Length: 130
Image (cartoon, rainbow, N blue to C red; front, top):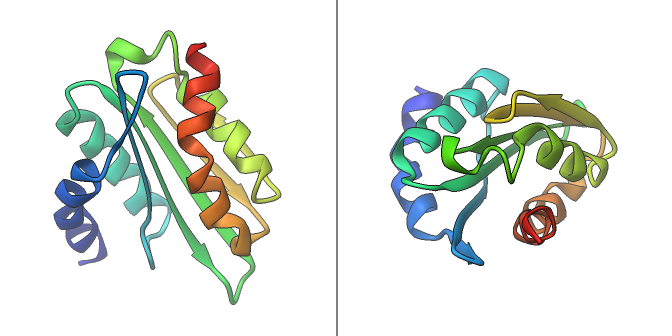
């Protein structure tokens, strides 16, 4: 159910993408999503974006945890590696992570910083492609 709700919002997240030097960057918090739901949403975003980067996050304030996933379309994976991107953003939430060039996950212990990490995604992509 949570995955279906998140996926239904995907079109809106994509519509709200920020253009970073010609690259569509989607960044959104998905309330209540677990790691699997975020990964699924990341894969779905990779399929729906013609060319772009998506970063999704969720947080559990009660447990003091935050999760991030970064997804990058194949055409951009050499320039913007999901593993490196999620690693940079994870530092902002007191954590770390990594993964494949096209899909990577991270965790952290500062859920209150998730909005800052998501807001930093476009600039992180800009720096990686400079």
